[in-house]
Image 1 (tube, protein in one colour):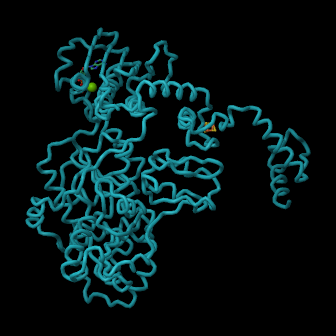
Image 2 (cartoon, chains in turn orange, red):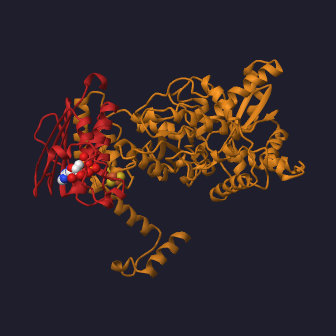
Length: 464
Length: 154
Ligand SMILES: Nc1ncnc2c1ncn2[C@@H]1O[C@H](COP(=O)(O)OP(=O)(O)O)[C@@H](O)[C@H]1O
Ligand code: SF4
Ligand SMILES: [Mg+2]
């Protein structure tokens, strides 16, 4: 097995080497070799950007199938608050949790409540914090990976408070094992996830040996069956009771800004979308962002509601969460953890991550700095000779990466079509031959670009 | 923006970047590129961090107080060397400019979040050798050296 687990798989039979993934990858982790996309494992941060752009559906997110439940004697669903965002005010969390039980889980717990607790815990942590600022949230595993791989010097900024999903799974397992008098390993906790990346935080946690969660089911997979399961369920007699089941602090964790909003911090930022995150992290490294205490960061646009495994339109679900929060505020519903209780647990280290987060920086050009410098010089001078148009035909995402691949012996200079004018001539001849074979003869050679003739050309090709 | 100068020296990497005064849109690009290069070379994250801060502050001062400048990066196995030369107003009283909190930034610049008067002090703090010379009406030259701790690098 390879060193890194990934929640993305490339299906070679479907891949047509169309290179969309190549360009969109923020860590240059993809190469197209022999017409097929390949992943460089240590570079991939599981952001899933490639999944959405692949025109052939050849990049497959790996989540657990329903069947996984049968491995356990007792199963518990731990839905991300992004699941609530799929339904909004029309179907409230109490009914969703009941629906999940009908689907086959022995129990379904409300994660928003734990999110609320963790919000308080973060607040506690920030109160006495004197280390480097801003602190960065760890709820999105892609962000944690991005920092480990590309911004190793920001590791100290990641908040050491564990994620609600881990804390909730840990506690419910303990509780149920005691109650049912069965070993914890016979209890299966399943996260209902808006994105594939949570899979890696379960299969290969960044900071500890083992996750408290046993698997993750995709919200997209659960959505349909859940809808039908909820059909038979009666409505709560009044919506007030349904509303009272929602923790106003926790529900916001589904959207970018929801966390900071409840933290009531003087200076915090909510940043969503990888391209934006990269800009902000670059600024932190330069020392440009100084007066911010906390950054809530999500790789998906608008936060977890924008996850690639959700069903509802991102804007609608974002709006649904905002409206829910407004209603709760208006109705003065405060189903929230008791701050004193949170403080007591906080003092007992209940909320802190287990283990230590280590950086995992990309390998430098060479372990030896003198050789690294020489390679860098070679890379730059190679780059100067390339056309610098980042066409991707060589299978590397950009001319600069191509130059690096050549220096590292992973690509051949011959792979760049532009370095070989002969190749172009040869290619041109092949095209002419092909055209002649299809029986198309341009009337006036010089006018090949004229609308009519080009149309004739395409028509000819279609009929042949 | 990066221009590779064919370099005379045996084992050093030299790259030069030009900076345009008043170009707040591109401000920070040079230091971001420098940071990427240092990471590629496998330099210790803490040193990269110090270098990134020094580079950014030096770059910003050219953007804010000069017409144009040239940022030269030199990396050898022993050290990181920044040589930043600008054509601009120059600094009349260097001792004063080096004081924490001293700034002649305009209200507009402060509006944009600059002008805390911590730039030069932070460059000094984050470098091992720091020299600054300036001539009023002509320009300013910064000479910054940060040593690379080989031990940590392996
Ligand atoms: N390259 C430069 N050219 C002219 N003046 C400069 C230059 N760099 C710094 N100064 C002067 O020194 C002062 C202090 O600089 P610095 O410590 O970076 O703080 P700030 O940039 O926040 O003003 C500036 O306000 C400016 O008057
Ligand atoms: S020009 Fe060459 S190196 Fe650059 S992307 Fe195209 S094929 Fe690759
Ligand atoms: Mg300054």
